[in-house]
Image (tube, rainbow, N blue to C red; front, side, top):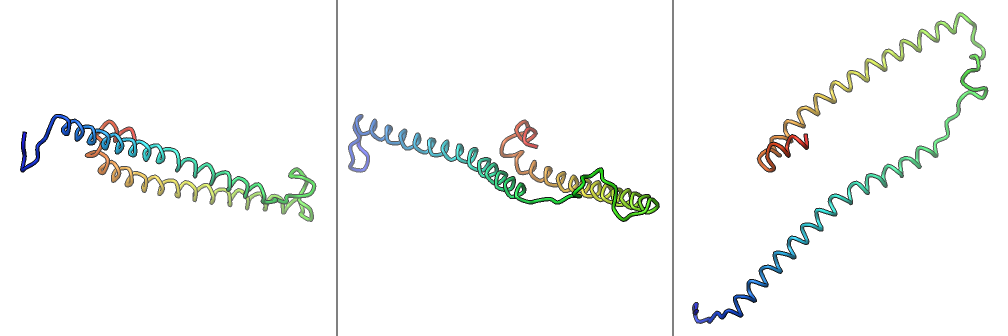
Length: 134
């Protein structure tokens, strides 16, 4: 067969086909390598960061009462102990209410993110995969 002054033989067609196949296989191998790197590198970096934070936190020295936690409060009269305990209960209530409010707000943001991310994923990967990742 001739095309614009070039004669294509069965041999040149096979070479072209072989070149295209090897190019495609190389591209697929590169894609597989990139996917493997994306699956391995970020979690590895996360583990290394967690280890760094663990070492840093372990280096912080905490100083509690010398006699231990069961020791009575020094210099405090019995009447003041009741006031201190009431204050501690009030503070713990404030902390609990604040933590609950924070979590509710956090969940509201997560719902908005999940809906937005689902809208992006659904046309790309289909409903079953979209549900699996949300």
